[in-house]
Length: 455
Image (cartoon, rainbow, N blue to C red):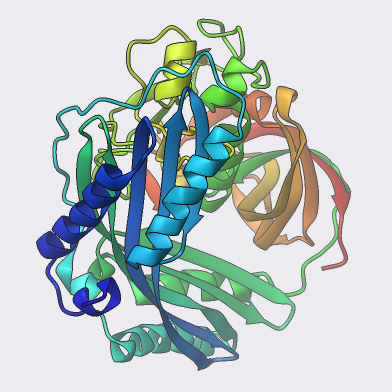
């Protein structure tokens, strides 16, 4: 029976054992000195709506294999998009051929040895069983919220579940399962637009009424936006905007590979102050407030990693290879799949909150902007953490603590570490946004907006 046929109706435990069995057989049959096999097997189901009507219901099943082979410290990596035996054998042969044709890496420390992995609960059976009808009803509640404001709704509801296994020739054999539910809503009211989003392990943790009402309210009060001049403005950034900045910051600053190669703004600066003392950032794949993951993509147990504490740089994410190059005994559990050019990255980001509420953050602003989210973000200067992008779907002028009117979207150009260092208020409540990032609402002083738009 093929893997595709076997996985129909199988339990989580049976699927994890199946992946481990496939991976162990492949490792045992490999002619390489060392072999690592990463297997992922999952399915996702998506409902998409626009113009107040559902227009798409789709599902997909995906399987991926990443095989790393080592021959005389020469490393080769190959992938397959099937767990069928022929595809896996071909990928393993390709990885070995690539290794033999590559230059040796004298710093290669060998594959990871097995370590004890504490299990995490990241799988919710009811989420895996959510039907198209349930997703349609969820969309319907968002659409009704938009209609009550005279608007139109667009967005998605997506649920997925999957399993991940890592097996290597040094004895690593780890498997886990997960579920994910995500929704976003974009509501337009004439020339105004509003946005809301949510993500969770459990589908019941998503609230369609709350999402719809939030996006619809923002769209309603975004009608007839006015232009304002570019310049420096105090801002209150809502969680989607904060999360986007943190993801880009992680990419440029917290990669062990970039750090090792001198391409991170933190290279040579651990222990130094790099931003304001109110900024504390960390990575923690084991925290239940995020989308938990018990081990990384080479089988290392995950753990909490402090990146910046009270403005001082403390760490970067490493895999086994980069940890050894940096003189560390063990990695931080931040390995990406061997096929990734980034190698290692913390991807379950957290930002410490404060003692305020979003309302009080607004009330404390004499004149500034409320920003819902950013769009088209790009990196201008990675060593200075300078990003540029656009505000979108809910940008408002605030005067004396009150929203006075919507404004046309603005382009920002800002050093993110410097801007976060000018935070003078953070919400107590932390919100999980896609990324995943768990972040507060943040008030910043003097963010640079470099241009305007016509919408």
